[in-house]
Length: 287
Picture (cartoon, rainbow, N blue to C red):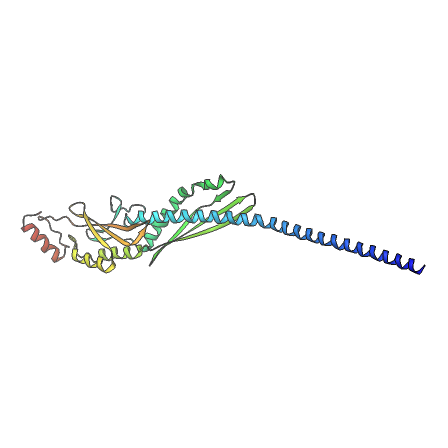
């Protein structure tokens, strides 16, 4: 009787242990499934954020690339016109006249910065092309009005635009207002200073000092060429091999317009040196 009871108790204990083992086994499986579910849903939640971040980065890179390209085009464009985007009232075929008979008309650095900013505002939209590449991918980009501000620095140009921009897609939307690029290794600030100094030191009203220009070119490591377009008009071209834009040396042009020499009527305001020069020319049979 005692042996039978003992066997029965052992059988019940074995069944209880087996049940406990099964419960532990199912608990482990449930815990693993729970962890898998949490990881899956957590990853699902992060995916839209990551994808949206990638889309925003792509849009910003595109805008930055356009801004940089248009800024470089603008720097080249105004350089060929004496620092102007829109031709000034006194110009020669669109290139600004810095020295006009008896007056100096060199634009300020602030004026050149404004001219570049105006160029960027007027031409950036052509590069952006209404964000057509993004529209084809199901992404909508809304662009607000553009305001630009340019700064000439010692080693380049900084261009900043304020352009409210909203990127919208199925995953959400994001807004950005300001974009900034720097075009380095363009010494336009220094070159503008050279042009201004050449003009400010233009004491003669009828000619220029060629040896003085050679000294200026040597000191600043630039080339200065002069092209005579008429009897009184000269185009100065400063070329800087240390300022490269798309592998091309930067050029800056401006014009000096001198008094026409008339042996029969010499202006009284000319300097004694100019009068003497005209007298020598006229006595030699030139007019």
